[in-house]
Length: 105
Image 1 (tube, rainbow, N blue to C red):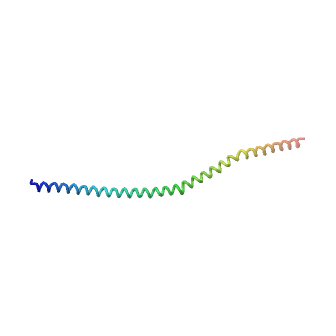
Image 2: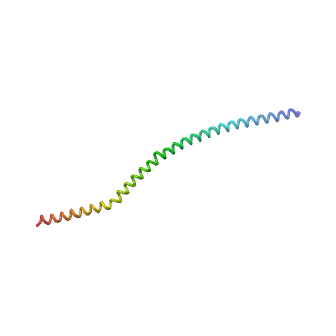
């Protein structure tokens, strides 16, 4: 094999290697585009999740908080109401005893 043939063989090998590299680069570019599309879809879905959290979940948490606050306020008033009921029952018992005494006399 003379020098020209050797050089041609080397050039053919290099060209084949470059074609393989170009093919690999195209595959990588396609994969990158797919990844970019996937990331874009994820961003879109995350935006929807954020809106759901802001509009629904935060609103529901506020409703729960308001309901809880109302229950706490009622619970704080219970001792006073129980005391009023106990006083009324005591008065009714006293009146009943007095009426029974008058009836029995």
